[in-house]
Image (cartoon, rainbow, N blue to C red; front, side, top):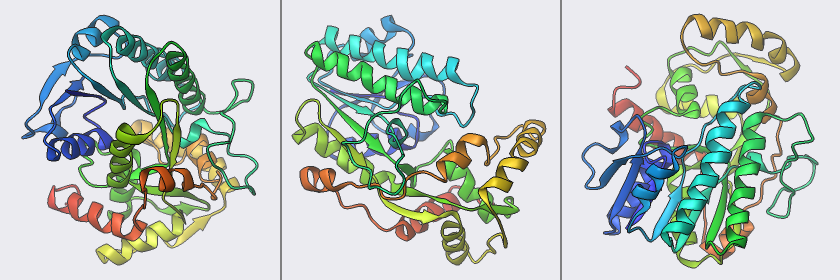
Length: 326
């Protein structure tokens, strides 16, 4: 039996489908949403990573746990929430795995758990984790602290591996995710201007295949960066426009100007009951390291991330066929 926390998200939904395709028994821990899992032949149980008792019940009889549940925040004042889920929640999962005799934990962290600077040097698994001593986004700090909880568990005898994906994009994005919403907004002409900068984008299906491989062959304590390909925001917008026949935003603004208008965009999003695309955190991410190396994953896991254009084409087709672009 394989247990997935955070199964309702983009990665969780794709991972569940991949495991089921292998003929494996899957138990998904759901908290609120389960739309992404409709029609799948899997067991669903109500559980909360912040509730240790519910985790012990949910992990009973399992052999492998994929820990995906996380709070993703683009704000600087979100420490209370992200600490509760990404740090304490991970601690609870680790404790439950040890108590239930789980044979392997595959923990999903983030590239943001690693120091991005120096920006002119390639970033690989040897890079230090971010330090609480620095004024960094709470999400970044929480993912690094969550990794620390997993490593404490490893020292206590837990068999676990850690994955650090970059910006994940792909089909079965029911929520949709932050990047999924940005793609939809681009197609619908709801982003008036593009910020300079870019990010490393990776296909969710490639991340899932690497995770499955890591479960099977990685040594305990290993960590793997799962990066894809760096593209500027302008390149992503232009590819999206070419694939859909729509028009990409003509205006591009430098990061410093985007920082100036970010508070106004946040206020507008508040009144529209939506989430702003440009915040201090998201703009900082657009200036992160562009040389993110996945050589270890390629060597150990046969990891070969596909081109972003292929990912965008499949993602847009999925969004269109499921009514997100109407």
